[in-house]
Length: 267
Image (cartoon, rainbow, N blue to C red; front, side, top):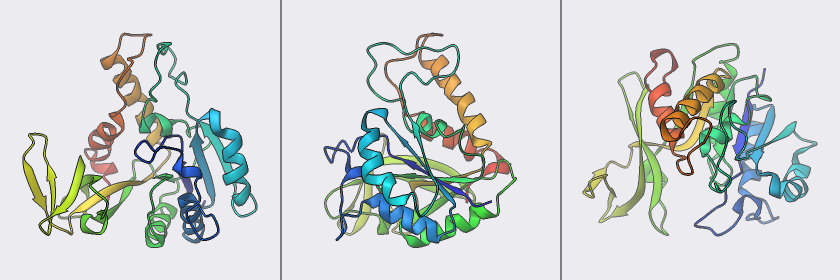
């Protein structure tokens, strides 16, 4: 069975100032997603699932889905604040989404095969989809088998300012052991630099692997994810009344369950 591409398209581009997922950038109005879908098809993916918000469904169907329907099967799922596990309710005044892992959970009813997760507004490159598609094609029927496409940090920097990246550490066998998000990485005096949690400037080598949120999972991920989401809600809010703030548990989930289980380490 061919793997599925799961595209996270529900978020607003806050620094950009709008829904850049819907903006054309290429010579014929292509979006960043258009390039990703094209490369994914060539990389062996057999279906695309988009998670979006209900409020821009019509625009998304007209501007995005209509271009793909004759090329690859596509489905839509929706991220909503009130789509929570049984026993939990959401405060009426909450506006902020529950975060990336909650968005990924929205795909659990339509994805039954190995799948990749990407951001809608990041450019990953043709080779990344080819590598990930080949890896996921070998994971059909497996459990606890996950992977991540890593990038050399020096190749991911911007000339327009600092970038946020998940700085990775791996063991001698190439398995991922930890991911630490650094929100202000930039080149200073020729060196890749960032401020750590204590405000101290640190440097890393150009070839240090970083995550750009391009992951590969087997479908059992959804069960682990849902249980962790319940733990998150219990720890940060009262039972049956969810917290008004807090959405950063996706990376915590990755660090705890993907990096720490020997049978499910990421490469």
